[in-house]
Length: 105
Image 1 (cartoon, rainbow, N blue to C red):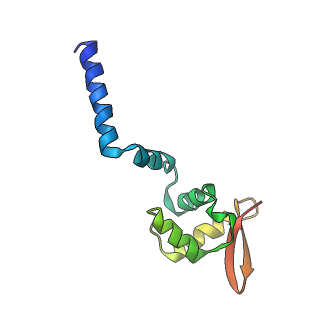
Image 2 (image 1 turned 180 degrees about the vertical axis):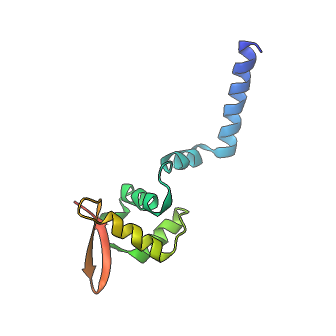
Image 3 (image 1 turned 180 degrees about the horizontal axis):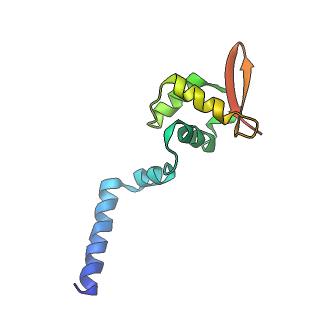
């Protein structure tokens, strides 16, 4: 194949990808690479400033559902507890008898 033919095929492929995947879907997919599992979902919420305010495990679970991370409450709770150790990105506290999590400052 000639160089022009390869360039033509590459240009057509790029146009098809833009139509099929769109720019926004590609950007979201690129951001979520490496953010797998419940821990990855929570780290995504931290990066999007969702955890700047204190949140319960149930609130975190509901927000994760919106981002297409579907986990049971026990799984989310375990991930939150593991991220709230002394050197972790979160801290945990009791407010009104419920455990809440917030980004460590």
